[in-house]
Image 1 (tube, rainbow, N blue to C red):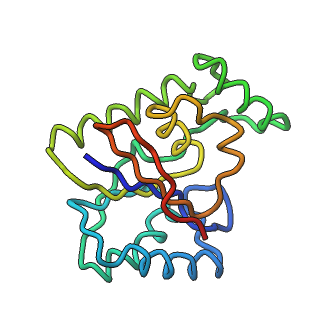
Image 2 (image 1 turned 45 degrees about the vertical axis):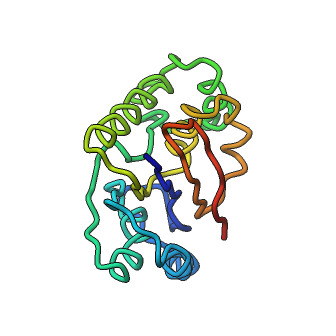
Length: 177
């Protein structure tokens, strides 16, 4: 099974209902053109508005429906405002069980995404397109490439497109705006 995994286009904020910026809307159109002609057994998105709006132009172009899966939602580092969020996030890449108040540990987020991938495999899909968020995408890639960590997360842009060959445990970057 191959997963084409996309980090959403540029958005106006981090809240679940944040829309895409004007640039993000243009990126979504360019992404649809890039993906045109590729066949996917299904298209699955995070429930967040910015993720759905990222893939909507492609779904319309290819006449595919968008399935929503809560397991693709962005990881919450902490429910509390944290002025040191960046250094704390970096710590979670090393200390996988580290958990901040109201947040999800790296271990828990990896369990969530592993469950999602296992369900896809049980459906016998050959090619799946997903849209998610930067931190969760980096943890998904880390499941197949242990060298992908915090520094690689920092280098992600909106949008990025990765191809994950689950059976070969191979990850390659396909496109970046």
